[in-house]
Length: 320
Image (cartoon, rainbow, N blue to C red; front, side, top):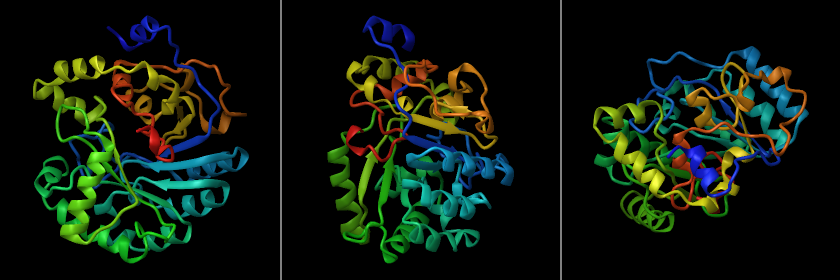
């Protein structure tokens, strides 16, 4: 059954609420080619937000207050205009998040970003799929484990993830295969034990996210013969109670070219906000509550079990 028909079966509609979060996808360039990536980002991608679009995004964020602004990619650290974005966005939002790539942040061209993150009190959300080196490298590639640990230690040294510092370091964990994530509380206890006891690393919170069947992850599901079973798992776990809290109801996502979507997953699947390609410079106001949100069967990933209400809304951690 399609996701749309499942909503109808439960007498549900997926409609927008008040927009509170602006998510900015600055491009698909990345130093890694992670298996779980729903965007197929990697070193082979050249898409990056231009200085002109950065200016339009900053002007838009100044015109409309967003309680949270969330910068993602690819690897945001590879965008030359990232310091300009940080300086322009930090004063106009309550929480500024960067979905950091630990290995890209370790590169020499990104060294100055650490001080900018601290200066602007940026919340860092860093992908760390597992607290076990072999499992993590199965998803992210050889050598990534030690690089990630080294950067986490560096972040701890400047205050990130340390109690009382006010500098939030969130770790984001994804399953290594075609199955759902474990419970967040138990997973966080394991991560804390493994990282602090073995490596002396602390962090603020762990987020456990479901892998969305798009991009490179979908390609892996198809090539490994897991697509049908995984989709059945997601659909079988549909929880109608999650629909009212889905991130797409309060999100507005803008891509590297300045076009608007309701979430990063609709961006990845090519489904624009309102079903029409709107550019950020042409949007006079924020979307009206009650307008319909385009969906696809990948939306089952956001409604399975406890849901993916924080799949882009890191500020709403209790909903994961």
